[in-house]
Image 1 (cartoon, rainbow, N blue to C red):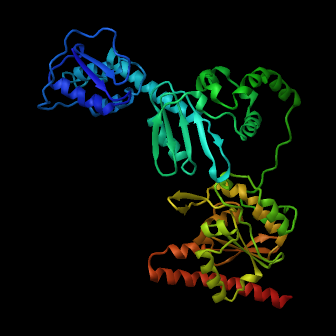
Image 2 (cartoon, rainbow, N blue to C red):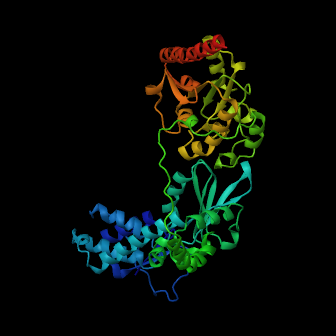
Length: 481
């Protein structure tokens, strides 16, 4: 009898090397016992072990899809999986098309194990709920999950992509995954007592879950198929599920009895922001103080502070950038870093005094990814731009500028309320409604990123030309006054 000890429960490389050696030495599946180091030994050991195997001499081939299937199936929790996979490998040597026989017991069992692993991976993606530990810049997000199979390493890349900009840990009884913004690491499993309890955001999440729960569309069996009860105990919304299901019939009957509601009038998608009724015109000082506590999106958690706009209360021109950078985040003022210096230079060359314009950003918190001691700028996404647009609209209502200059794609999206191409809109005045106009141009940081000196000089001149339009509008308004 040959006893094979693998390093851990997911040691595919160890299994593969051992299986190749066994097969090339013509060791049948019945002559092999597979174990994982550290697991309990069998009660009775055989009186004698088989002699050591000779180093493999020669080779053989199996279908590539068997390797893919085995890499997934080996993550199943079935203690017999190593033996079953070796038996299937042994048979494939003489029957290369065996995997096409879906009704074969070994093929069906391995395929079923792989399917169960993929299903468990999907459930982990869907039902992990992070809880915040610590506050602001020291915050870390921790989740507890109990997988059916050994899927933590398989599932971790999804969470790296999905939550790349926050530090997190996923704790499980088997293995724990950690992301620090640079790399994933794994540590041994822990008990549930090591997982954090409820955090400050969970009551908000429960209110949101209750608000989107639609009793008229409730299908309990379908819901429990997608979200089995065993996952409920780790979900913050679990306490609401039973009461919402129990109350669904009464709520649905009430909805039917209430009759139809008046349909909402459709809005034009391209309606300019200023054509709508503007928000209340608070003073800039009051808005700045209020924005200091903004929690409309997650960016406040890692940023040093809110970076609000600054300039004259009733400036004729409002310059809108994209978001604060590293220098602005630390200083609490817009356009004080390298892009700000580029802007100051171009404004002066175009004949515009920065002291007479109001300067702000579409997004008021610095979004970045840490790389050692450096914080790398990240482009804000649409939900973040939408969350911050309230501040732009309230600045607009307070200042009432004649001209709004959108510098960069993020700024243009905020000003017009939709994705707006820079090149197609650049260099011309666009009516915003109520007598105000908009001008689209590039962001000064774009000029800093150009590697070619000739291109940088050419694009800088174009930027100055755009700002000369601003200067001309200011002169025109001065003459009219």
